[in-house]
Length: 446
Image (cartoon, rainbow, N blue to C red; front, side, top):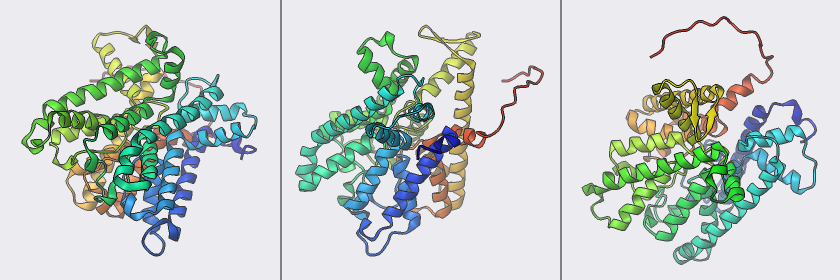
């Protein structure tokens, strides 16, 4: 594997690595002992499930608990773990463990895979990520075991491990279908331990590996963090606190939720603010929420988590850069400055490109689903946002969609995980860069 890999660009390798995991997982799920039903599962269903698991989305066309056996669930969980950490990161970690020498090209691959700022120290950072992931997932599984064992017996041990990895990787797959198909966490909506642990896993998994490294090295000395970590923490905090306040003060004060106690309203408000970033679990019936609340959820799904994390979406830093650019424009400042640092024009250009690509894919995908399956545009856009943001939240639309709409969701999930820019860079990888420049001419915008 390591002899000819340098002939391909890092972007192409990232695309191929995810495709390889997806295809392998889809074929394994077709094995007769992967499903409870006799015979082999339909390839269309296994492919959709494999894409959703590898891209850590959580949208499903078959209920995970009642369709797949322990083997099938193990295959899905393996794809979730690999997808959350990145196939290239996992592969090179095995190379490090086996004692192989890691060259410059492979270090570049690792840097791109986890969105690290530089190649220096990448081996140490990757080793730290592996240890941290295993420790966090193990602790969370142990904390949730009492609940799962008391409700499901000894198989609750497996349930605790499954939900720990699924939540940390921001995947949104669940095994509560034995109680009610496609129910997610609604049957244990207000259990304190499940709520708190799942939310912490989502936040920690989605905050970014570089942020973990900063916290471990500098503790609470916020001023010493990288600017990326600072923006990720501040933006994430705002994107949790503000929607939670809105849901508490508006959504869950409606008569629809009149049977909720004060503590249940608090849990529901915070969870529905956390889960779109990009976990896919839900503790209430999303179809019962108002259009305004669902619209806010769509925005949160599109934004997603932070760079170099298990989450997808536009990323918190992308939105932060665009907002800072807007503020700088209003103030008629030539440069974007924040926390004693200046953000380059190229960063702003990339952020604008990513934003436009996500919004375009989200809009076009939603329109195609609406036309193909004759459903309302708002519901179609919700599923589209969930797919491109690799979230997994649904209004119950996905299982009943036709092949055209399912294909659209598969494409959106794949692009949402690898990143639209990765696809663009991969298609231009072999082209010779043109260093000549055209004459400048200004135009008025806005």
